Length: 199
Image (cartoon, rainbow, N blue to C red; front, side, top):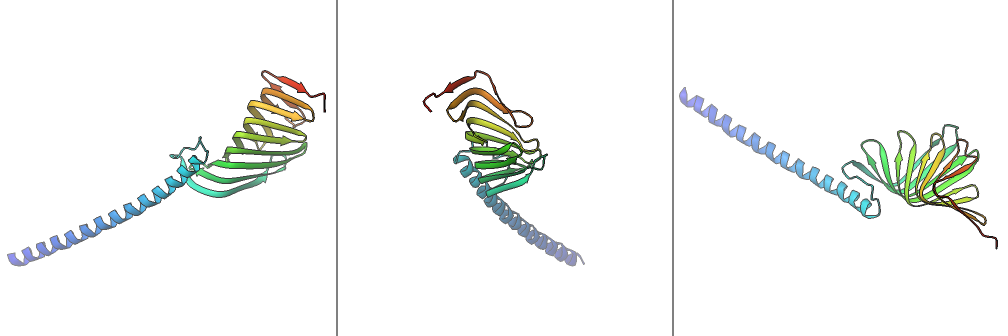
């Protein structure tokens, strides 16, 4: 009887040993696969950062996407479209963008903008653009280092080294914003106007 118990206990130990070994192998293989996926994702994020997205936070990054496009309507039912060559979606639902182009069909005219970097806060329809921002609004051409567009209320603000040109007039300012109805452009800070009388 004692031999039968020993045989059962030894069989149980051997079986338990094989089950534990199998579990360890499964855990090891799964962790290697997850590590490979994480390395692939982080290398995509790193390549995006290397291409110029200095504000990218890899710890926030969730999904890297190629050729992004967003389309919707403003509060006044005016259409807008955002295109980006590449972007990273964060867990919060924001998108860090590279090589951004956006167009808004406003009642007061067309607004188009291009920038090297951007961030689209999709939850509240805010588009923040940085680095070599070029904005065209009606007959104005505006260069700036930072432009913030509220796509819901269709207002925009340009900050940092603002230069606005129309025909033979060039205006430099620290900040430029459109009024509520986008009927007036308001310049703030140290404003300097240059009028070329030869044109």
